[in-house]
Length: 106
Image (cartoon, rainbow, N blue to C red; front, side, top):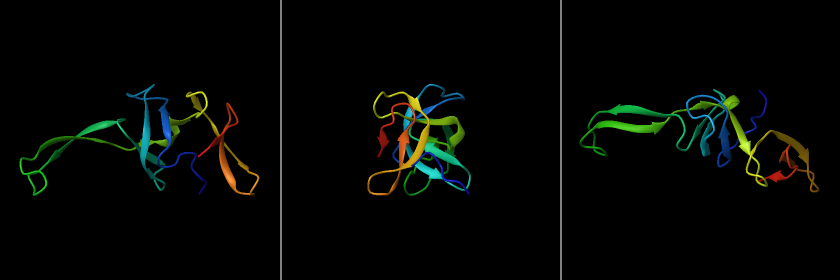
């Protein structure tokens, strides 16, 4: 299985779908499904039964996973969506970099 271009904590741009054009922070990456959960993106209504945490129950809004092919990492320099490359840095470690600006992504 190949590596994914998105990691937890990245700021990503949504290319397609209902939330096209929005940006958000990656909360979780589901590697097996090639999906990511992004803060404030792909919100769904989930019906919950009353429980100890929520004694009233009701409808709760939460983020649903979105396929990573619909996401692009935001360039740290320009703030625009960019593709990701990998290269060896001075210490010999493999790092991700922005193909637009060439800047390393932390």
